[in-house]
Amino acid sequence: MTIQEFQTVCSQLEQEYTAKIAAAADLNAVEELRVAALGRKGALTELLKNLKDFSIEDKKTAGPLGNALKAALTAALEDKTAALSAAALNEELNRVHLDLTLPGRPLARGKRHPLSIAQKRMTDILSSLGFTWAEGPWVEDERHNFDMLNIPLHHPARDAQDTFFAQTGSPLSMVLRTHTSNVQSRFMEKHQPPLRIMAPGRVFRNDSLDATHSPVFHQIEGLYVDENVSMADLKRDLSAFMKGLLGDKTEIRFRPSFFPFTEPSAEVDVKCVFCGGKGCNVCKGSGWIEMLGSGIVHPNVLKNCGINPEKYSGYAFGMGVERLAMMLVNINDIRTFYENDLRILKQF
Ligand code: PHE
View 1 (cartoon, rainbow, N blue to C red):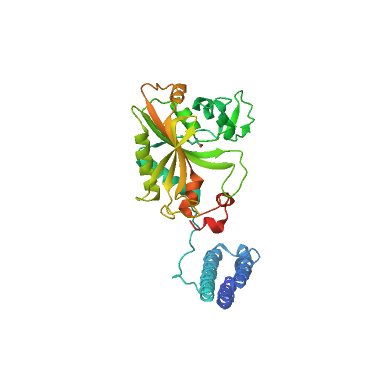
View 2: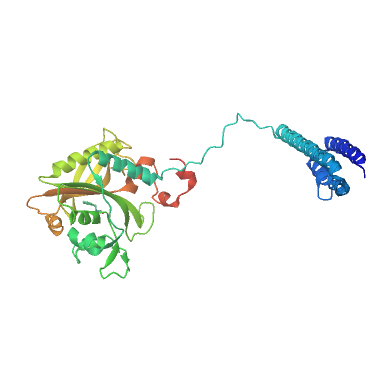
């Protein structure tokens, strides 16, 4: 091949491939053309094989010509690729009709369980009254659940608690705590008065499940110990607590009762919030709803915890969360709280 022929073939190849590239219908066709023109066995490689037979002078002419051809074809391939990609994107956008004004998909939001709602309402009010949060273990030794609370081994109240016993391998006899009052003994053995705590939590009793009983339920304990604490303090604070929970007009009354760990003891009722005291099916005609147990901390309990009952006195109360939650959210079967039916949970 002469250098003139080389020049002719160069411009022929440029014309031929530029035209073919311009006419390519899709990206596959462009790729085939790239291989045919610039690939290892392509037209350019074939042409450049002639270089080795050229004189030095001719090589100086032919080399740049080959480079220019390669650059021209590479540019044409890139331009065509870009044009085809843009066209494909345009076509896609026309086809799917994106409506950028549509609102986004909402995030699924969780909700508080009705028992948590009730418990939070109670702890919010108690903390505004100066009570701080305290907790105790669910699996408890009998000493903290019973003995220190003045419920000795053969006390009939111990049977009345329908206790679940736990096999733990501990040398102590362990139970699932039957009330949050274990937090009283736990807290007082570690802290001297003045102290004011609330202890919300899960408790366990060997009851069968029905509309009003559950073997697992929740209580909130309140405990206030200082100098000169009396029934008057208890009544003032419980009255404020119940008004905060159920409204400013709420009335409470004390009924004499018995708990081994309080003396005197009182059951606290609220005037029925559904009928205003006239009597309805919620209060079973009595006009009052039983809300909690309470009393003045028994001197033996203080003594058992290392607090001097000559110097200090205190009040305590314990209240079921489920019972209050049933009133607050108008649920009349305690089992509803544990079934976690989403159709119900979504309503709160
Ligand atoms: N622990 C008692 C119960 O579970 C409630 C209570 C607590 C009563 C504190 C008096 C004082 O029934």
